[in-house]
Amino acid sequence: MMGNMRHVLFIVLCLGCCTFGFGLLSPLSQSVREIEAILKNHDLHRELLQSETILDIRRLDNSYIIITNQHQMVVDILYLPAKGPGPQKFELKFNTPTRIEEEA
Image (cartoon, rainbow, N blue to C red; front, side, top):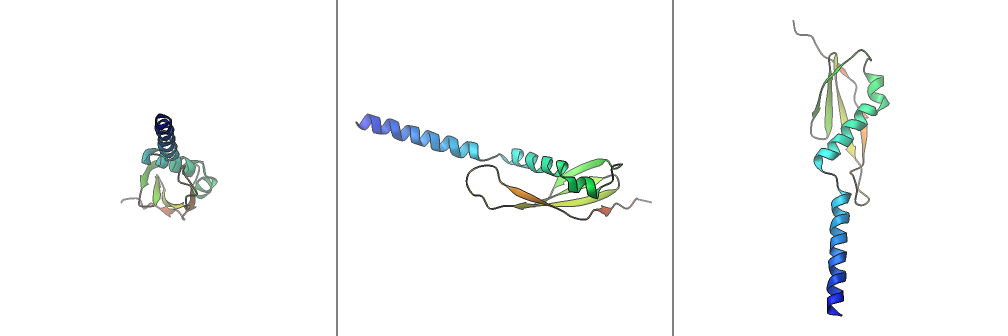
């Protein structure tokens, strides 16, 4: 009887650890999801010219800065409250692009 209880407890602990481990994304995976969401969003394509080239994407605190050959634009990441295990859900807020001044 005691052996069965230990066996059941072991299975429950293993399942709990596996569920918790698979429910969270690593920081790399989370940032990949965020950057993919930014690049696929219609607001990015609406705000920037189709002739622009993305030169750099940099992570700031809770935002990214997209730098092109003509503009830079900040995209805020608005994290939503977690309702359970799983990837961190978020919304994007695209700020108005600012023109990059050419060096003389």
